[in-house]
Amino acid sequence: MLHIGCHLSASAGYLAMAKETVRIGGDTFQFFTRNPRGGRAKDIDPDDVTAFLAYAAEHHFATILAHAPYTLNPCAQKEETLQFARQTMADDLKRMEYTPHQFYNFHPGCHVGQGDVVGIDLIAQTVNEAMFDGMTTTVLLETMAGKGSELGRSFEELAAIYDGVVYSDKLRVCFDTCHTHDSGYDIRGNFDGVIDEFDHLIGKDQIAVFHINDSKNVRGAKKDRHANLGTGEIGFDALSYIVHHPDFEQIPKILETPY
Ligand code: FE
Ligand code: FE
Ligand code: ZN
Image (cartoon, rainbow, N blue to C red; front, side, top):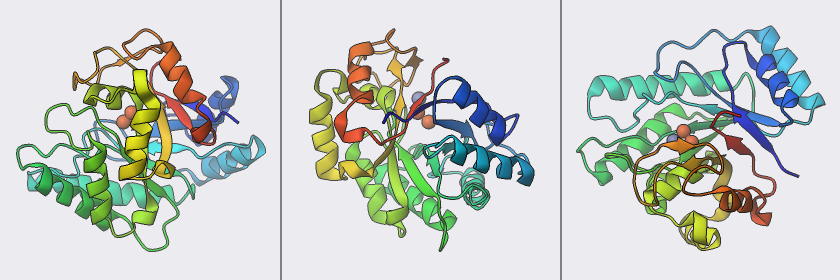
């Protein structure tokens, strides 16, 4: 069964997002845990959460996906920025327990001149500080385009982050089609070959979610500019092949472009 949904605004709460999802024919959705630029999170409304959980069960929702703010840099060099990332992720993961057993996706971050090795080590430390014993949330590393000093642009880097995370059984990957294409993987011409490579380095069972985005740029451009489905360099046929791939039938697919 296809599990599919969109990125939605969280401003009206969980139940509103679930209803919008059903209206458009989906069974999962993504939302920002707080303003994408960071800042304080809205207080959780327990009534909204209760209503949402009942509604999601009734409509057989797949796992939903919370997305950390973009400004969260888990491998920042500036102490203040690093502390913001650590506090935000820890706070987000605590709040996620209101809706147990969901996914929390974040961008591994930019090493800003510290180098890959230091960056990867800082990312693992940030995750280790935020995760806690008994948590039910699964944390997802998003595959990145490799813009600037962005880490997570290669499967090797993602594998190295896994190596540093204590609760690695609570870690999975969110595979963004635009980002992997932009970082240089030929998902358009050879998706199966790319997945083979992923399988050898990390294990394809570690892919928890797909972000289905087209890309405005050619493969390897390292840009991260999403295009509407079928209008970009990946194209409708390749994206459709991924969406319907038999190896990932159960894996939620999220569209991050307007629907
Ligand atoms: Fe993202
Ligand atoms: Fe994405
Ligand atoms: Zn992107």
